[in-house]
Length: 125
Length: 176
Image (cartoon, rainbow over all chains, first blue to last red):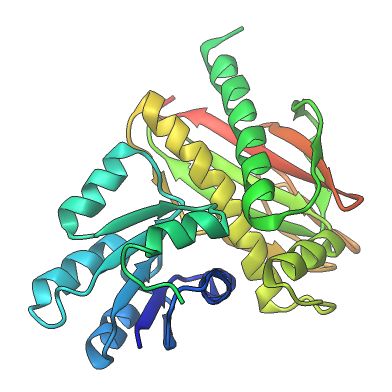
């Protein structure tokens, strides 16, 4: 069963994302949380993570730096990453994809938008 | 209308749109709003301020100003649990609301004026606190926070669940 890592400096947002996934019918076995990119990098490499959801603007290590670091690490470097962020616009989406992100969702989002985006990476019950 | 006034008017509309979208998607509470206006009074009284600053061709601050009662209601809704104490989760929710409004406004500004950078949100909350602003006017508040600034805020008033709140904007052209 899939294990999902949620990286966001807002604990409230991590809870909202987790609740929306649980209510959506998407199959997730376990959630792992991290408050910034640095902690996210540690948890991504220490756990068997199947999907990462990552904010952009965070202290210590930003989301985009996290994506570059994970993709360049050689370890677990192919885990799918979906950016979930207030940063919008074509340029940011392009930058994220060029850095190795596999998907992009702009906050605020509806539960259906989240389900639709994550449905590319997770099975539905 | 000067160029900067035109930009401010446009951003006021963006703030209204961003706040409406946020309430329709993630907060799911009723929302009414009124015309934005420049608040010339240098003092803004509130209990809670969520602020996000941005830099680029224009720089400034977008701030959410609300009562503790509203902050508790909106955080309770976001977390789907009744919150009665002003916990870190409530501050976090206010910060995230400010962040999502500012992020949407920033995206529109970026499309028009080039890349801009957004700060991480700051939330100030409390009673009997005082802050000193850029023009060094001392501020002493009894039971509310007071926010002083040299420049007027463009305030957009909203009402949700019977509680008033404002989303404010401070804006300047960089290098001027």
